[in-house]
Structure formats: C-alpha cells, structure tokens
Image (cartoon, rainbow, N blue to C red; front, side):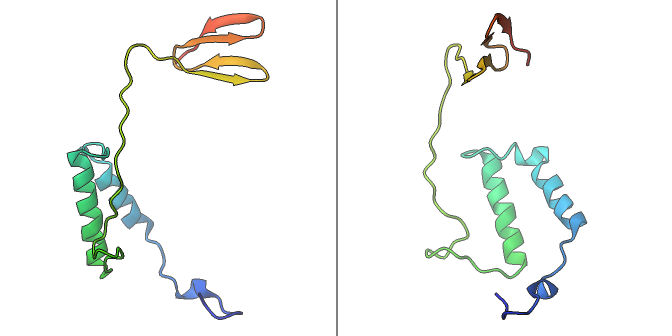
Length: 111
C-alpha cells in the first residue's frame, strides 16, 4: 500500500503479455496432460509454477516452508445415465441431450 495521495501503479512492473502467453502455451500443452488434480499432469504443473516462483526470487509462503498448500482431494464418479434438469419460472430445460420440457412442448436438447 502506498501513502495517501501517491499513485502506486507507477511502482508496479509492466505485465509482459508475450511472456504470459508463453506460460499459458506451456501449461496448456500436451506435456502437462490436462493438469487434472491427482494426476502426473498436476505434479508437472505444480513443479513448473514452483520453478517460476523460485526464478523470481520469491520465497515459500506457507508456515511449513513450502510453496504448496495441502488440500484434501474429493472425487466423484458418475455412473449409469445421469440426467440434469434446470428449472425456472419458464419451465424446465435439459442439458446435452437430456430430455427437455418447456410449457406446451417437449424436445431433446442439442449438444
């Protein structure tokens, strides 16, 4: 925080859009295998981000001296043929091929 009456934006570094795009390109590449939690792709992503933080000279911020925070992972597996219906005052609308019902008509949703 700056002092009242000072423009702190002048002291902030400019964001290099080309560099940001390069990081996005790298993280979105097939090498990172989708980055899903609990996968090798997640491990690669976390390592990449930690390396970038270290290269900037940033120190870990967690009380245990690490860059990452432990978060319990909860998973859900969908079985059978689930349906999803959205209800509103105007009727019901399905999603992605699920039966749709609206006042006065019935049809299949399109994906």
